[in-house]
Structures are given as C-alpha cells and as structure tokens.
Length: 370
Image 1 (cartoon, rainbow, N blue to C red):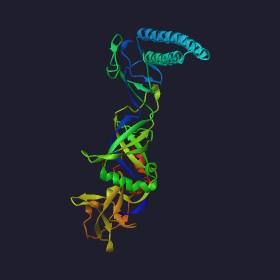
Image 2: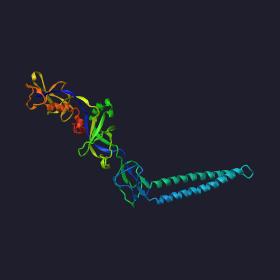
Image 3: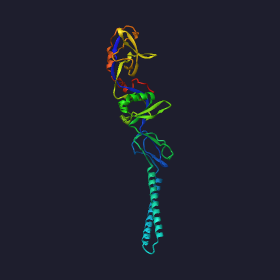
Image 4: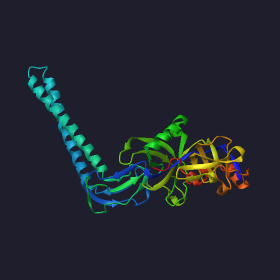
C-alpha cells in the first residue's frame, strides 16, 4: 500500500464565478436640434476618438438664424449709442435753466432699457451659435461605435432617440454575482490581507481560452438582489489592441471569472486520488496503530485535479494511504510502503497548480459558483 504523510504545501486560493464584460463608458448619441441629416461621417463598427465627427446636419437654416440674431444686436447697439447721447445732453442741461430732471430720468431709463435689450440679443446670438455647433455631432468619448439607426436625408430631432452608441474599449469592467454566503466567506478570507488588493481577477473567454491579462477588483454593490440572493462584484481589466487592431473583450460578452488570491497560502495537502466519497461525504484511509487502516472523515478546501487541501479531519504528519485503496477495509492490517514516484512527483510539482491550470480557471472552486 502506498502511504504518504499529510504535509503543508502552498496553494493559490481561488473561486470561480460566471460574469459579463461591460464597457466602462457607454454613450447613446442623440441629436440636440431638429434638422435634416446631411452626412454620416464614421464607419460603423470602427473605433473613434473624442471629438471625431460622426454626423453632419443641415447648417443653412442655423447659419441664417445666427446672422439674423447678429443683425438684431447691431441694430440695438446703434439705437443704444443714440440713447447714450440723449442721456448725456439731458445731464448737461440739468446744470442750466432749461434742464428738467424728468427729461434726464426718461433718457436714462430708455438707455438702460436698450442696454438690457442688447444683452438679451447677444444671448440669442450665443444660443444660435450653440445650435449651429449642434449640427456637427461628435464623439464624446474614445471607443468603438455601433451601427447607425438613421441614414442621410432623414430629419432628426431630440426626440428621435439614439442615433448610434459608442462604448469605451480599454479598460473594461467585468461584473459577476456572488452568493451572499460566499461573499461573506470571501470578506472573512481577504479583508485582513488587504481587501481588494489581496485578490486578482482572471477570466476565460467563451471559446475556452484563458485571457492573458489580469484584472483588479474595485467594487462591491451596496445591495443584495432579492430574486437571486446574490451581490454584484465588479473589477477592471485591460483590453489592449492585438494583431489587426482588434481587442479580445467585447461589451456584454459572457465569461468565466476566477477570483484568485495574490499570495499562496499554506494548507494541509494530500493527493487528490486518496480522497474517496460516499453519501456521508469525503473520507480517506490513514495508517493507524499496528498498521491498521483507519477511515477518517475529512472536509476539503481549495482543491485541484491532483492536490486536495484538507480543512478538518487530518493532522500534520498523518500517514494517508494513497495507493491500493481498492483493497483497503477499515480495521484491516495493511502492509505500508512508500508512495510511487509518480504520486510524490505530482505533489512536489503541484505547489501552485491552480495558477498553471489555464490561469487557474480549471481548478475546482472552493465554494462552488452561485
């Protein structure tokens, strides 16, 4: 019978969840004035920069309105100049016998009224300039632009709805729900180790490939979803361009998420092949007094395909039967011997199998996915 002592080994703690990729910024582009759409400037599905022209609306009516407002300002300013002269003359006459206070007061009131009219007219000019600028619809953010919902020649208005959508590309958010029970366990595990800084996020893409960038947890929602009894967690992950200018991550993409501890922890470890299960749970056979096989009920923690961490039921140095288990019966005397070189090698080389197994996502979650 192959026997191996239960020993302390480092293992990376990890928990697997289901999540989605979300854009950090999302803008629904809408028209802010009513006009005919002259031209769509962008190519659908491409990346745009902040300030890039997207749509050009008919400018003629807005240019004419601006010139009309400027003319009104000029007319009022000319009238105001004359009113100021009239006020100055009335003020001069007050020092002589022909001057009347009422005449001066009326001239001053007329001047102040015209000054207010000029200010109002200048405000209308500013408004016309703003409306003219709105005929050029530009991207408010860097990102990837979607399809257009309106084509040239159509009238667009502020109530036309979304013309197109721009979503930011780098970085991206990854959001995933966690059961309240497991969320409390995660908080107890990592709060004293640095909180958000004690974990990293790794993801697996829908085609099964491990994404080669590492994300950082940065948000835990402030309320629990009553319908699922889960709380939403969110992290940020880089999404740089790769060959051909494309990016791996897409807004609303479904991914597998691995929340992984930054620092490996020491756990009591045994070969995964030594763990047996029945209706009552997991158990192993250990070498007892007089070389008698003893059944020992255990509880497993973070485990991989070759290494099982044991949270209770075993002690450091316990001799666990790892080979020949099909011939072992509780209470029977066995002939112990060293474990095979293959078993010992797998234990020695599996100090961090969680990380090696496609970014850790192939590992068995400690608490299961919610």
